[in-house]
Length: 149
Image (cartoon, rainbow, N blue to C red; front, side, top):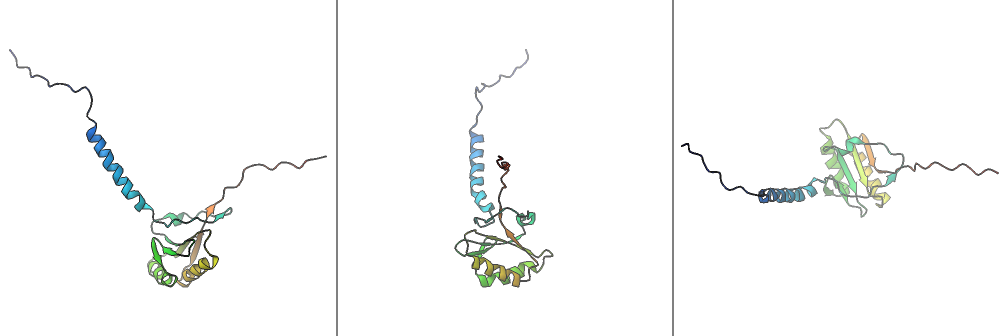
């Protein structure tokens, strides 16, 4: 007589506890890492209808200066004073061919603060300066013809 091994008892339902543990760990990792991915200081950009796309402003190595509504100045995510901006931008531009700096200013920031920051950036030897705005969507409704008598 031949030996026939006995099969163990079959489980009626799959064990999903290890999968749930892995999903919870991944959820925690994403919750911790996601806030670190934002590199820009949040500002309410001014709106403009005739703006141009500046795709280079979204690059990781783009130099972005932000001016908040209360007058704080950020180079990347580092808060700076107006006097420190020129030296910092000169250091960052020294090894670059593209000497473009982008300014993100809050729509409620004081005009004088933004002009002072732009002046400091220009004194650092910047060739191109981009003012970042939020694009206003144009209304697509067609005008009604004038009423005729």
